[in-house]
Amino acid sequence: MKKILALITITTLILSQWANANNKADTTLAGTWELEYAIYKNQQGEVVGEIKDKNTLSRKILSEQHFAFITWDKNGKFTVAASGTYRFNDEDYSETVDVTSEARLLGKTYHFKGVIKKGLWIHKGMEDGILIEEHWRQVP
Image 1 (cartoon, helix red, strand yellow):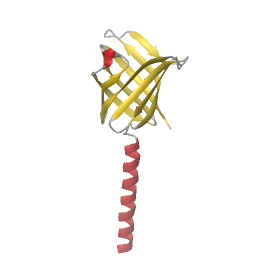
Image 2: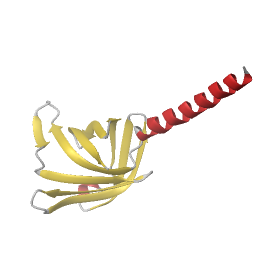
Image 3: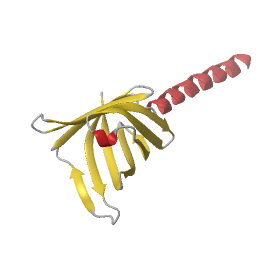
Image 4: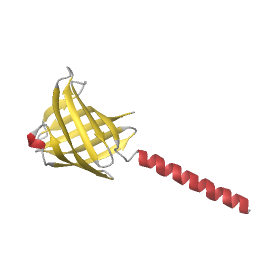
């Protein structure tokens, strides 16, 4: 009986560790992400911009606390880059820009609601009066 109880305890601990490891993989942003799709709407809900079909390309790299992104067009022409710090708790994501090629972004903090599911990170929030929704695909 003691052996069975010990086996059940050990199995439970192993499964618990496995579940926590798998759950953490779905809640961390650390890694490399590429923009798959984005839509931008004004305060009236009208679409004022959309990124699809790889016309605009963007890559974001995140460590545990810092981010950096670069955006370019399909011909390889540089558009914008920025870097700074970020926080991600549950579904709340915020980033503060401390270095950028675009002066209007410098020092700003942006707040988004986001989820990560199966390698896809979707977040929504206001940026300079525009509601944005971005879909980022994690790069293996």
